[in-house]
Image (cartoon, rainbow, N blue to C red; front, side, top):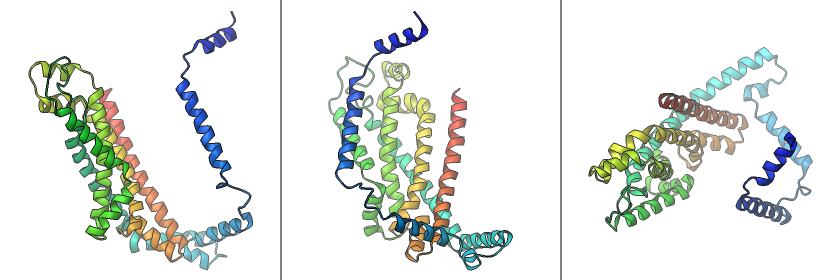
Length: 305
């Protein structure tokens, strides 16, 4: 038998997951139905007008001093750009940048603390009638506590941060706290769920041994789960911090003075150059968060190796 025939035989004999195939088929049908509904007609787009808008954007997105001197040399334009960046940074850029990063740090710290507190009562294993001791009759009300905690975590992460902050602004005003609490609540739900799954999927040897020695739920969690799973939890923690930096920028559009606030203000004044500046500042903030997160996760993986 040739190698090609062997490959064909293995393909015929490989396990086939019909659920995946049906899922792809249903998705394709839904995509076709959405396209045929008429909401995505390409022929109705005025391409000439769209091109004019693009040209206008490219012209007005240039720094204002460069717009005033279109015939200047590249050296002069470079100097004008750096002076303009410095002016933007001194006016609102530095304040909004620091405010955005600080807001995201406070929010993710509160989210991490909240998730560590909610995690034990959201874990299926820790809230079982008799955790890690199958066949032993235990308390019947702990499983209901776990169901209630998991429901609250689902609720916290299912409501977008923007909506939570929108309602909090009504009662707390236009300051940092609506954004901080909105990000903290949403990310506490996500981290609590991810952390509880870590506990549920951890090897049985350590918690099982502690239970056989007479340890309670609290002792099993703090002595058997937290030490062995904390580094993996930190990976999720820093990943969510990256998203907090990005979302803190967006929440500024509610009137909270982050980068998004000044971006929206520039858009209202039709200052597309300032608008582009704050967009790029938001990207820099997210990349800084990603860099810190990458370094920490690399160190954690290196320590586990």
